[in-house]
Length: 257
Figure 1 (tube, rainbow, N blue to C red):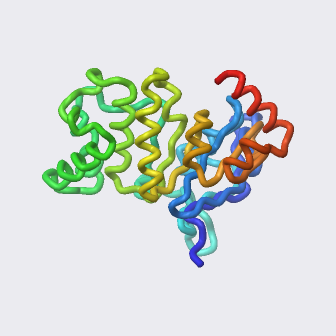
Figure 2 (tube, helix red, strand yellow):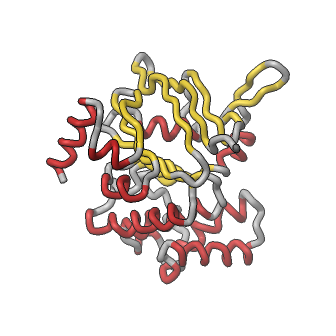
């Protein structure tokens, strides 16, 4: 049996004397959707950024198909990867942030084809063809020649998702992708993510959208103070939480809903 697509072992991360992650262990199988929830400051986003080495862990390791992320063995010694080596590795993981980070002077289409042409050396005609197919998938084909300033927040985020997919990642990471959106725009982004999950995309999603987590996730992780407090099937964690901290958090979420 093949091993997990992504594996996290004893991951620690600190900023100065503040330890943000305190020994995280996770496994994500290919085609699985994992949602990570928890209060602000629990370490969720830091964990996500450590997965692709945007943040360098203090200790522990992350493996993508058994290949360590951010480091390499040379003989019997472990070295940090060069910038180019790390960039090549990161292509295997797409990431969608809270902010959209689109190039404001480029159109939707130009934003999506930029990396395939420059990084992957994809011929422009092929890049455009593939980008238009992705834009159709996320419901943005009719906005291909608009600039970001002409789009709603939800449209910008769907463009950002298409841009990440254009690199054909093995894994997609989402860091609170709807938190910067007006409430009426949240649904269109979640619908796009739901579609990706249905198509078998492996996803790790930091979110506060409990309905999405309940519907789409295969595994739900609740974090607090840098540790995994509870983990399991969404229905089990949400409807029958075993830990008092999880119970308190979910009760507060229901009050705020």
